[in-house]
Length: 61
Image 1 (cartoon, rainbow, N blue to C red):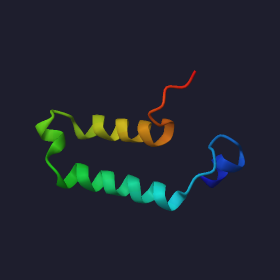
Image 2 (cartoon, rainbow, N blue to C red):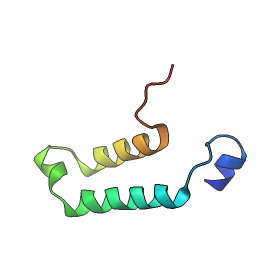
Image 3 (cartoon, one colour):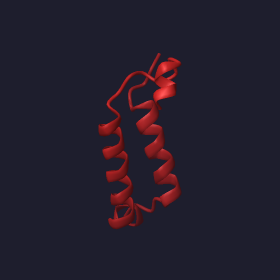
């Protein structure tokens, strides 16, 4: 990630917050039953998580 920031591919961001958010989401996927109740596979949830964490949720022009 540091290299991506240095190369201008990624904007500067707080890596600690990113890591905590990522780990917390993964833990919830594994420990909770929300995915099963909503008929979402772990693989699909993981792909969506990565997409949200890397691209955000704002539509860009």
